[in-house]
Length: 103
Image (tube, rainbow, N blue to C red; front, side, top):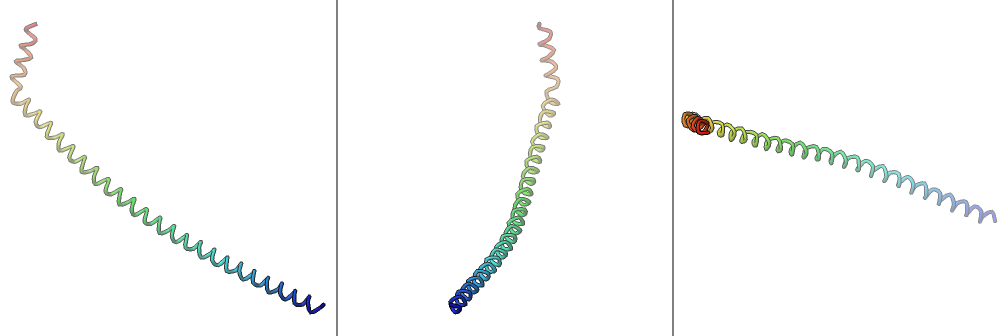
């Protein structure tokens, strides 16, 4: 009977050791996964930051180009209006005067 109890105690001890070992491996795997996740998160954050910075630079360059083109177009329109005024100023005044005196 003592022999059976000893065998059962030995089996229980071995089962307990196996469970402890499994729990240790489980913790190691969980720690490894946590470390890999942390590394992946860091890498992903860096890549995202680089991509956002790149897109921001491209957008700013595009906006500056559009603003430059709009300023150039506006300056051209203003110059055209000034040239038209300079050429036709006397005629505009005569037409206006003529319209005002007719009524």
